[in-house]
Structure formats: structure tokens, C-alpha cells
Image (cartoon, rainbow, N blue to C red; front, side, top):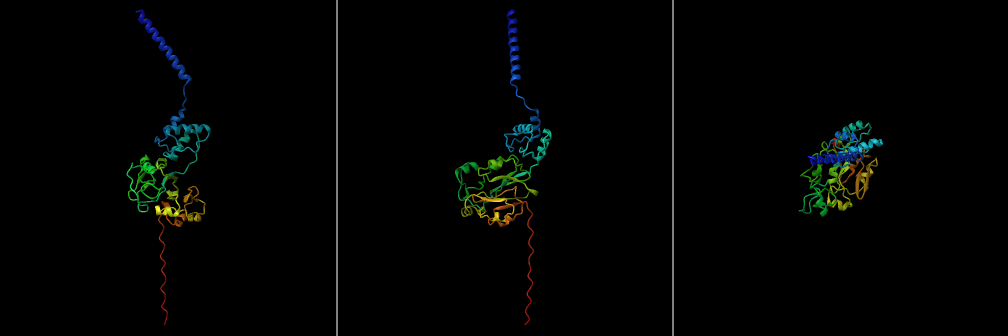
Length: 292
């Protein structure tokens, strides 16, 4: 009996000492987590898409709380939740934010199957990343869309699909959250996030081909040839030509569409604008017969 009592007492003493040690360690090495991080995390959509620049919504919540402690959360934005979610987060943190204009993914390649025919047959792994690592792909353009749909696979919101007739990806403006997953997935960086614009109207150069004019046109009939006619037409200094290709700055563009009309290869696209009204036919008056 004495041995049993001694064993119980010893074990109880060891347990008590261990409990005291663990308690002391928990106090000394405790990591404090601001309760606001969890509250902000509950407001975020939980998509964990990485569009905000962080690994997930937890990282975004932590950054928002730290930014609030420093006095500003400007530059932090949840593309999925948009202004509505960010407004609720700002109210929770007692901050004010400027409402940023919504963005949408834009495919900057107009080289459809008709305008950019195949010159080779690729038989490897059917992904854009694999095809791009092997060379120019199945067409003569080494800059345009490869057509394997890596962007489609990367989108968590069913906002981008491949058009079987053109062989190009098309973005659904209503579903796109501007998370940037498709832009990261494209090995040729032809997808860009741009402002949606008023009434979802946008003007952009649908080409990223950096070859000189003749070579670019040989590869694709819709290529930008870097002629600079669009630059001359723009009154707002919104267009520049660099590396033989034009680029329209959406911050400066006023959607006048003069550049669209000036482009000789129709490489500049205007989206969601109303169809132009047909010009009235000018009827010439019949010439009166000269009197004999």
C-alpha cells in the first residue's frame, strides 16, 4: 500500500510541476493576436485568390490591421469584395478610404485563327506554359495568345473562357473580379488589368508584338506595327510607342476613339461603345438637261 501511495504522490508531484512549467512557458512565449484580425477576416470573402497581393485573406486581414495602426490602409484592396467589402472593413477599423475605380481583365491579343493561321503542330503537354517554353507555339507570332487556356484554369470565378472560333480567351465583365489570377497564369503576359471605365467602355491596343512592322504583319494581320498614327491623333498624351508597339494609358485616356479610327491595322479595340450611326447618303440632284 505504501508503495502505491508513494507512486501516486510522485506522479501527482510531477504532473503539478509540469503544469506549472507549461503555464509559465505559455505566459512567457505567448503570441498576441489582435482580435480585429479575426473580425476583418470574417468580412473578407474568403476566396484566398491572392489578388490582393497576399497569400490569402488571413494575410490581407493582418495587413489591414497593421495599416490601420499606422494610420492608413490606402493601397490595400480586395478585388473580389470590391468597394462594398472595403467600406465595411474601413468602418470596422475606423479608417477612411478612397473609392478606387473597378478593374477588369483585358486580353491584349487580337490574333484570331483567321488573322493568325497555324504554321506548326504542337503535340506536347497542352498548357500555355509548356508550349511557351518550347518556342513560338503553333503560329508565327511569338508574342500572342497560345490558346491552351491556362488563364481559364486559373480563374476561380468562371469569368474567362476560350472562344472556339477565334481561339482567344474572352472575359465576362460581370463575373470578373480583377483578382489577377489570369494575368499571372499567362506566360506571355497578354492579359492586363485595366479600369472598367464609364459604362464599361474601354479603349486599348490589342497587341503586344514587339517585332518591327513588316515582321509583325507577316505573323498576324491584326498586329500593331508601331507606326505612331495613334500617337499623333491623341490630344491627351495617353499613347506611347515603345519596342515597336503602342500602349494606351487608361489613366490618361478620355475614350475619344480617334486612335481607333487612325489605326491602319485595327489593332486598337473600343469595347462596349454604341454602334456608330450610319452616315446619311448624299443624293446628288439630277442635272438638268441643257436646253437645245
